[in-house]
Amino acid sequence: MKINQQDVEHVARLARLSLAPDDLGIMTGQMDAILGYVDKLNELDTSGIEPLAHAVPMSNAFREDEVTEPIGIERTLQNAPQRNDNYFKVPKIIE
Amino acid sequence: MKFHDLSIQEMRQKLLAGETTSVELTQQCLQRIEATDDRLNAFITVCEEEALAAAAVADQQLASGNTPLLTGIPLAVKDIFNTLDVRTTCASKILDNYISPYDATAVAKLREQGAVIVGKLNMDEFAMGSSSENSAAGAVHNPWDLERVPGGSSGGSAAAVAAGQVVATLGTDTGGSVRQPASHCGVVGLKPTYGRVSRYGVIAYASSLDQVGPVAGNVADCALLLGAVAGYDPADSTSVDCPVPDYLETLDGGVVGKKIGLPKEYFIDGLDPDIKKAVDAAIETYRQLGAEIVSVSLPHTDYSVACYYLIAMAEASSNLARYDGVRFGNREDDGDGLIGMYQQTRSAGFGDEVKRRIMLGTYALSSGYYEAYYIKAQKVRTLIRQDFLNVFEQVDFLLTPIAPTPAFKIGEKVNDPLQMYLSDIFTIPTNLAGTCAMSLPCGFSGDDLPIGLQLIGKPFAEAEILQAAYAFEQATDWHQRVPEL
Image 1: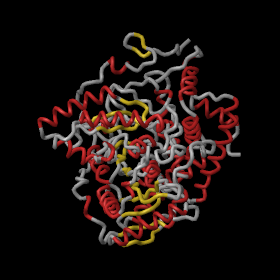
Image 2: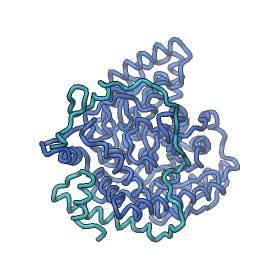
Image 3: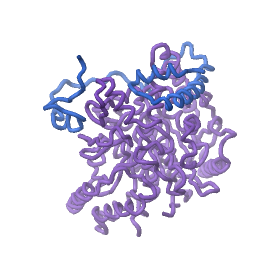
Image 4: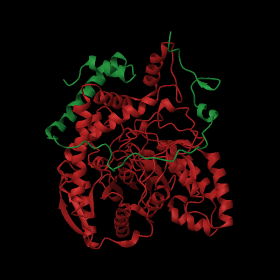
């Protein structure tokens, strides 16, 4: 076993997901099979090999610091699940 | 002449000659969707009113002359593209009510060229899948056999073109999501080089791999659409500032003297016999057209699926952190505090495959596993890319199958995610290496299912593979067959 139910519960908390008890078992089995498969990368000796983040060489993209037209408050808030005046409304964070 | 027999260029000629109008073409397109989509489910949203209004504007422009190439042509885009004031769901419940406040750059470019956007196409949720079954809007059906998948994740984009609902579409390709459905539906699809087309406004799945690609009924339309969307965009820092050639101008250059590589790792024992036969015949066609065929090796091919899924899932888990029920998207909240709201929102909003990839990606990036999984995969990616750079010193481009089998039955692989992942073996390596590649029709299976041929080109050599594809298309008639619907 690469991963057990406790590990899966921990990862779910990190990912801000809650899994129903039935789904937890299925997820554990599927993750275990996939992690077992990807283990095949360890057949390769990669010592001295640089990791590749992007296929095209690129460096930071700079632009001029110019004032442009913003999207506007109404546009920004048009999809807000809940709003209060010109703010996104969220559940209380600090008790 | 039925509308769905026309190419983009033929529509253009008829529009310029005054033989039809954009409103007429758009109405025919909407009628075809209406008549067929109950069986295909290729569209998530049809924008009838907006499309007809845009068509009327296009007709005025056509009357005044000197219009851009796509003026008045009805097109559709995958529901992963933000489209101003239109519902953009990415086939996810979590974005069910999301109305985009802006256009993706690729969509804006289509509009600048005069295109009429008729709707948003079905797909795997957040582009995660190879069958277009993982959709909150329901599975897409293959027009050649309604019991089969159209491939994925851009299944709607390919099915709609194959069924003549719309002449061409845009999809996205992270591990084969344009090419594999194009192959399964018997149409032409191209994944440009990473950086060739702006991703601004394209909902992110795996940012080091995602690329926008055209799907069309023939090579020339595919070239035309690529030319319309390609190019540097200051709003996408990963788009590359190199000139966009005129892809149409060089199409008929032929393949005389070209060196085509056959990577031996792609011609494996498990390959479906019908696919082997069709690809072998394609190789013979190229030989007759004057190309030189040589055997080459991409030795790390067998590691590409494992490498791809680790990188894609890690990047997905990070990209999809934004769906938290705060700024957009659905919110579920039973009063259990902020963290509780996040968990309820995400658990109710994401489908199974998306959850699985977020979970695996979170695990691969978590403390203690980051080096062993994510960095290891990035190192293997270096080796895979080097394989391609090596063979491109020996040959002009590569020729391979697209998928190990033709389109499979709906439901056949849904309970075995690993089997589904393994079917991406021939398309994934090009995304990891960042080169360009395309799929074009090269035959049919014994069950009358389309088979696709893959051409893989050097980085930014889209013109070269389009030219080779055009030569093949001129010599064969596979692209002229259409499904009966």
